[in-house]
Length: 488
Ligand SMILES: *Cc1c(COP(=O)(O)O)cnc(C)c1O
Image (cartoon, rainbow, N blue to C red; front, side):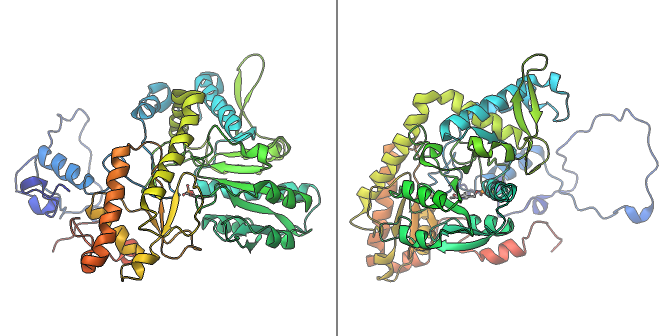
């Protein structure tokens, strides 16, 4: 952590560095006529602005930016959130003036290149998932889920099947799943997992009836496991007249290997800002395209890009039974360019090697730590491995404290306390883009922390020790953020 002295010391706010008369900007001579000022009540006479030099401003904000963990500075094994390396060529492509400076209201004949890119991306995602109907307009995973649930509802309604009000959701599901189903007007029914972490087929059977709209299921599950009963899950739901929704936020284990459409899924969403490398974090822009079977393609959100014969080859179109618009214009275009570039750079073989390496890395972590950390569902894992800190807890050190201690070792913490069905869960997702050396260093840190739990538990309990601030009141920070300098 850069916490040196002088101007790079971020403990001193910019305002506190102000020296009267110091100037950091040179304004050009005005080339417009002077204007009268507005009325006095609108003017602030006492404007607190720091008087600092340009290098001070640059150093201050650069140092601030480096206080955070990021994927470009640290290993970031945040399970379920897939923080993988974002190749810089993706940004370069998105910054091309033809993409970056285009206006969404520009006439179609002037934006054929951009529309062609979107059309190809729809095709690639349809091919990867085995679900050929694709709309790119949804802006996040949860947004895609909501669109998927609205499509499920519209599909049943169009068939006069209005009594289907229930959506089954496994107890390991991401919290957005029940929220999206409820927002679309469904009643959520929880399905238990069996002792292998698969959906309990008997429990599902009992639920499957004429009031079941469908199931929302994540594959691999949020336990990082491939549900070996998935074909039966799809069959049971279909036989009851329901649809299968797949939460495809985490496709890192399946890319190039398993097509969800072929397994029986009807609707899914993808998180381009996880699996397809575009940056995320801090609530930044994302994209959660929805992919559906032929049968559901007419319900997709508007617009989709269609390819026509003749004149303007590509155009935006609205599917016949569309659930309508889910966002302004065409979605987060810059994110879509990045995902397109990622897929094109990798090609078919590269896409396959993502899943190979992601799964290998997660299993390497699992095998290297199994003597020190409890593995509650002990099976070959997919792209992530879920440990439990129960063995450490028994010695007085919690999963949260282990996660905090990892910060001292220079690693971002893994996801904690999710999935909810694992006690003291630590969910680790190494992704495919880390080296063996990094994984080994992480393994060593986890082993060291386990030893510290015996030898010096307070060291772990009071962590982190090396970060600019230690334990935060996260709820207070979120509810009462302190964003503005005020005169002391
Ligand atoms: C991240 C994630 C989501 C939600 O995605 P957002 O883009 O954050 O809305 C949904 N399901 C799973 C399994 C996820 O990991």
